[in-house]
Amino acid sequence: MRKVEICMSPEMIHLYDLKGKNVVVTDILRATSCMVSGLANGVKSIKPVMTLEECQSLRSKGYIGAAERNGAKVEGFEIGNSPYSYMEASVKGKSVAVTTTNGTVAIEKSKEAERVIIGAFLNLSAVVEYLKNLPEDLLIVCAGWKGRVNLEDTLYAGALAESLKDEFESDSDAVLMSRDLWLDAQNNLLEYVKQSSHVQRLKRLNIEKDIDFCLSKDVFDIVPLLDGEELK
Ligand code: 3SL
Image 1 (cartoon, rainbow, N blue to C red):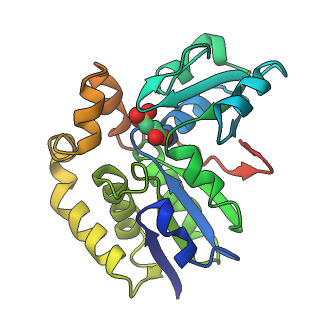
Image 2 (image 1 turned 30 degrees about the vertical axis):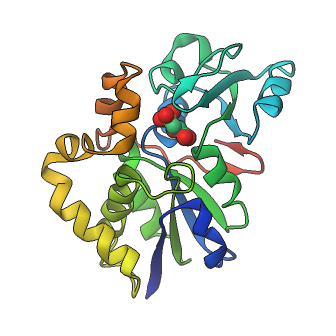
């Protein structure tokens, strides 16, 4: 049987062997939710980059620049990190270059994997069905917050591991804990996630509707994959 593990923060990724595995990267609030929303709504491709400078220089090559630091849009870029910006008509058919505080770091650190898959609640079932048909072991990488574990990514990891429990086995405590957390929270996800530190942080930015949207399940039926340097 295939195996599933959960890396609760990109700071712990050196503890895992990524080679030959499928990695699902998740940053529920909000980077991977934005990526899924954009690609499902006609964004041509998304190039995750680590720095504001790289993102800025890609703008001169025709990319739409998306930049977020500490939850806020960085001045001088077209869009920030709201899933609604990724669904605007102005980004349809365009390539987006994106840098965020945690999500793009998690993607960068996952690049050695066989496949890098972008996961969010918005495409949970699509990712589950996709993974059922692949022979490799699975690692779920949570973006967390500045190296620390967070609630919302852990809940997603638990939801994914729980949905795949008949196909993927695990002897990992991270999987056990995340699945239990998900089972406890699943019927009241919004209220549960409201306790999280990142929701408190984002509240100051008045983006409650982003949070509601990012916690919606199965809105989109796509599975974004890293193809070279770009998500498609
Ligand atoms: O850190 C990230 O990658 C972001 O998703 C954080 S925020 O939701 O834009 O605050």
